[in-house]
Image (cartoon, rainbow, N blue to C red; front, top):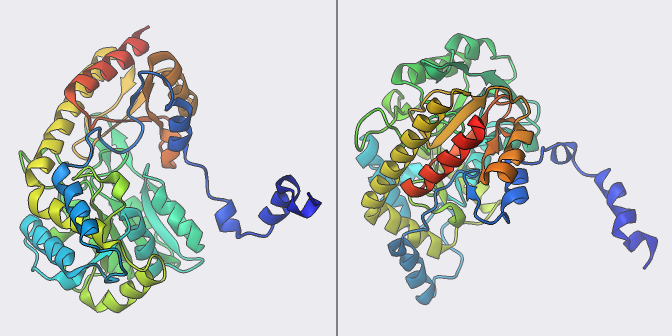
Amino acid sequence: MSASADPLFSAPSLLDHIRPQALALPESGIVEVMNYGRKSEGIIPLWAGEGDLPTPSFISEAATRSLAAGETFYTWQRGIPELRAAIARYMTRLHGVPEDPERYYVTGSGMQAIQIALALTLSAGDEILIPSPVWPNAAAAAEVIGARPVFVPLSFDEARGFWLDLDRLESAVTPRSRVIFINSPANPTGFVASREALAGVLDIARRHGLWIVADEIYGRFFYEAGEGGLAPSFHDVMEPEDRILFVQTFSKNWAMTGWRLGWIEAHPSLGPVLENLIQYSTSGVAAFMQRAGVAALERGESFVAHQIERARRGRDIVARGLASSNRVRFATPPGAFYMFFGVEGETDMRALALKLVDEANIGLAPGTAFGPGGERYIRLCFARGEAQMLEATDRLVRWLQK
């Protein structure tokens, strides 16, 4: 083998010639712990943002029927008309917005929806304001473009939980600011912005001519509004011409994390540009996957309700356990399906996550994976069955009290 064909010889010189933005992207702290512990026998994996239920059969069977019918060709870039119409009906049912399929654009996951939303609104050198701690992928997507994430610290106290200081948010605006990214209900903190807070964010965006990218994927997982309640949404406070892009996914509500299916909601005037961005990234989502999405929206309400109730029970189990340990700093989250907590005497959350794999046989995600403000916390996903959450909580509390 010649020296130039030897990977050990060529790799360093190749890395010297790739984009700095790609090279600088951090490795996922969540994936590190998952890879470390996934082969541990009997481990309870609470590290990822998904539950333990597989996709319901009525959803999978819709995809199977589509494949059997030969729907394996190129398809609509914006999404098949049936899915866009189903999304429109679903959003009208939830939020009372006008039923308009031209507002919805199907993407290959919620993550791609974020990437396209940022490609639409950010250029190299621009800034995006992101309340933190936060799921890291949006900031990384901005960095790939060459934009700079500006993290705005969330406030915290045990009585109130996490909350967004609007004065702090506005003070972070500069002439380079272009976008405010708001995830509510939030991963990893469970923070839920009130209607008044969302109106305040919108006022800031209007004053400074900024876009809002609204990640409301956990909007159904809101525990303070009673059964079937929705978290406050920008739909509640916006006008039709406001600069808001909504990003959504099928992953959480319908247990479809592995399907990689989502959508963007935007003003219809943006349709041609969004269609082009989809065309030049994936050229559309496979038709059989979209048929599954139609089935989820049209037949999945009882499953969504079941998912939410399981998560509520899981949350309450974990909260009771943590409170009994007398070593934990936390507030019971009003939304999403994560407990984000600090542990007395533990300052290295990466090391703690690895230690919990080895010593308690449970998998949690270190708060260091979620940006500034997460360094003293660890995240637990409670979207699982009651028996498993009782066992996981028992293991965690016994470790905390030893």
